[in-house]
Length: 511
Image (cartoon, rainbow, N blue to C red; front, side, top):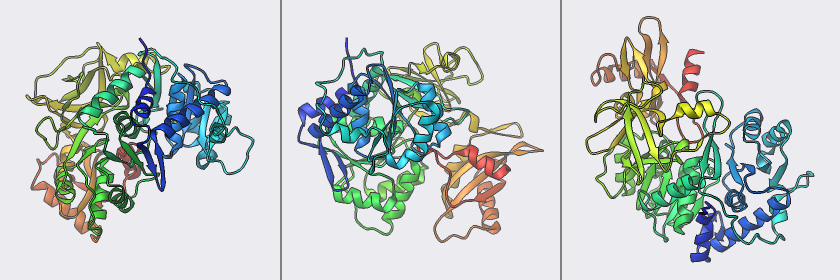
């Protein structure tokens, strides 16, 4: 049996050759052009000595070169290793060494860090978008006159397709090994439900393609459906709203900060796109924001849950079932979710409905393991279940609610405080635009609850406001939960997937 993730693009090029696959600025690329270009990139990579099974790192921003290189690598039977474009040279070098990358495809704009990393790791570099000759092979220039490879090299379902590195919140990033079966199943399954794609759909591609949310949920499912991806090089609220209106986008996928920005843009721009549905992931979106978006844009926001290690989607709210705000819906087809005792190691002990425990997952989406880390792989996948490190509950109807990361749990005076629960309450305060709750060291209670707040426009952050938020919270939460400490910031530090980097907030506040 053979299976290649490259078929996601190849089959749509056969079925809808002249339909726009990609829109970027004034440039429109059809499916025929995109697949032809990917096969030309594959031909150049082959001439550079890349073959089936070789790892090729991609250090590329959101541009047409990303899908061309990504599907070119897959068509060649090689393994794509997308690299976070925000990383510095030392971090990139770790990925190149760990993956054993045979080559790095790097955009000129990222060469300052990419070239240094490649030199340190001894990895050959091919550039794209390079304006001047720096003595390196230019993949896009060489691809122009190249003869495309005939078609995708056959692969086994269990062969590696992509290695995606985790964000490294608990140490050095680990490479999650994802197979062709993992990714093709996640793409085909989620295209139908929850994303409910139709060929005439137009997706706003505002997520970074090097991240699993933008890459699989965005690019891959869109191409699998033969729909159109309107790509943004970098997200900006007013520009995103303008682009959605001009290109008549029917769906959007984003992280919470993007929904906050779209709502802010909509306050000064009365135009509205023909949005039919919106999907949120990466972190929890407060229920008031969900309600505000539906009222402003006239369509629901479906929240879901996934991880790099699960290809990525695990569960989602979707049209097939009643929408339950505050939950991440039910597991997708072919995937099981349970809640197990978080403190038990070496085995999985499921808990009854309604009890808080660690979310564990099994199904076609679970990775093949962490690259070069058999010990970490054995700890992460136990009895066939992937241990997510997230705390959650399952209700009697199978809806999953994510309570928090195990590591973000605040232990105050012997009581468990779940930051998300506190954040949901604080999001309703009239002065609060965004909030993140963290635990800070405390001599008396072990940890103290601290709310870090981005105020609404026009609100002056001062001691009086902080005291007011604490007093307001005390009326609405148990004594051990409400934040005794309130700090203000203009913006949160964010990871590539849009998650607030709480460890950085804690470092700021305790440094």
